[in-house]
Image (cartoon, rainbow, N blue to C red; front, side, top):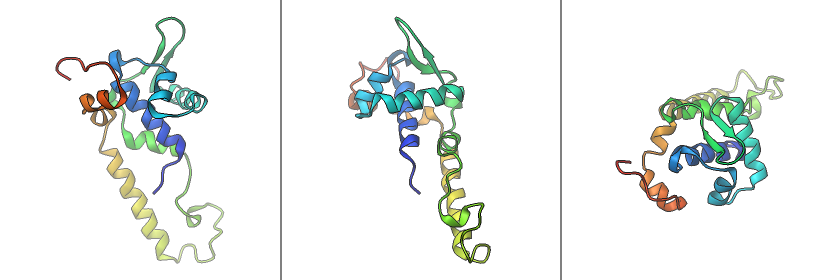
Length: 149
């Protein structure tokens, strides 16, 4: 299964914000760290704000921060929300374009694979994705990790 670019950027932004020093960063910092256009990330931040996952504070000392604890953000849920109603193959479309739809065993196999994919992601939280903060700090050039992290 291939994730959309929007989902990829969504996960990267959440990882960056969750591990950022002080739990706060700017869209520009995320863009620079990953080499992503700020305009794309503005859309991602807006959507995550609408979903109640990010806070976007304007003005001096503002920036992005998590709206809820990282341990309560389920990766599978984030992926499903970002991916929307996209389907893995034509046979999953509601309009029934496939002439062998309903009789093809590939449809069943792909549905099972999709469920397994989401079940694995459901087993992870954002906190688990950033539990290697020291390595992330070196790679993303954050300041030195806080003691005990």
